[in-house]
Image (cartoon, rainbow, N blue to C red):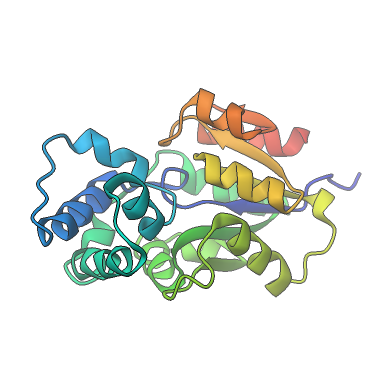
Length: 220
């Protein structure tokens, strides 16, 4: 019998990898250039997942130009000083991806990270080969919001039957982006978003662990 779901889109930060350490270090580095000292690193957790420039404007009141400049400072550390590799693959993720592929599902990445950075991370952790396509944001913010990245992945890969697609992510922007593209969504609870955040955004179902994701995909 043909599977209902054929294509599975994954977020990166908080879904495939625990990237908090490197992202927080890079944000601190960036903010330090503006004379801002972070006294409680937990206040930086909301930055993980959504577009960074948008978060700089939301949480620190930066203007558009200053927020883009802050992102450049962030990249000095994250891309230039190895912050992107201050990162750990969640236990069970390689097995999840391999099992889904073996079962005939097509896998794609849809992240708000710059696409080249996402590719470097996945290649470093030997995850890139598990994906049919790696889609991410552009550096000029022309494609940054999760809904736009998802649309880009679908269009680039020629996926037209949206009933065969599900988005897997840990933050509200993943769920909202899925809804904007008329996709089902799975919110994962082992990442950075809470149950309340994911359900509030309209997640169709929640997964406690990576192993649960496979079971849910098979049942959708």
